[in-house]
Image (cartoon, rainbow, N blue to C red; front, side, top):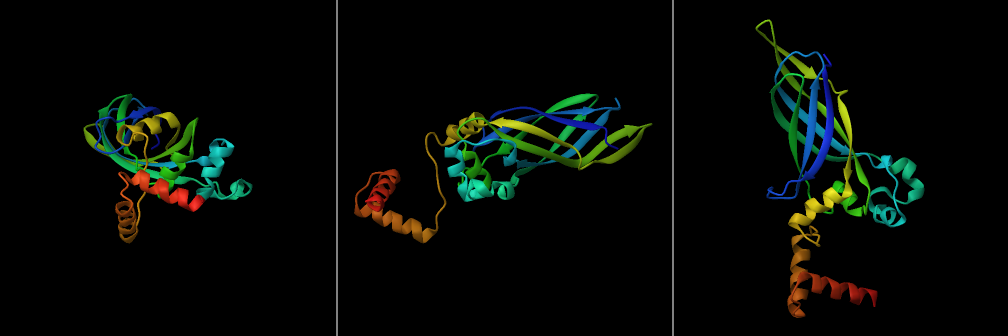
Length: 210
């Protein structure tokens, strides 16, 4: 039974989360008018990069993910973002539920690398839904599955993602490195008496450019 319809109505930074996180507002409509007791909902979210255009600077930063722009007709494939699960309370007609979506800032993760490469515009997301619906008919429990055909598109503003990350890491970024690499960086920083990691890396880059 395909009686549910899903729409993503908006997104904003979750300022009370311990890590960078977005809140997505999801509206669920039940088309028959029958009461829904609950929904055990799963939502797979992926990025669809082929659904927007890119500036020359953005394309250059995306080369690590998709290669040169001349190959993008073959390489601009969907990127997995997150998979979420939630319990939706009972409703009749329609209801609204907020999904908390953690956002990693590890620039080795494809989704974070993609987001960080964008300057303006929107991030084209596709939300794919599945799960189990619990209803009641003539006093009897009725259970059916959310068909995999249920999906919703949403254009997440780049500014919302940046605001989300900047709330935890204002004006900065971080990289994951091996422990031995970190030890070598620590020695370099100490040997040259640099006050911050940023100073140490800036000096290393200047030496390389020279």
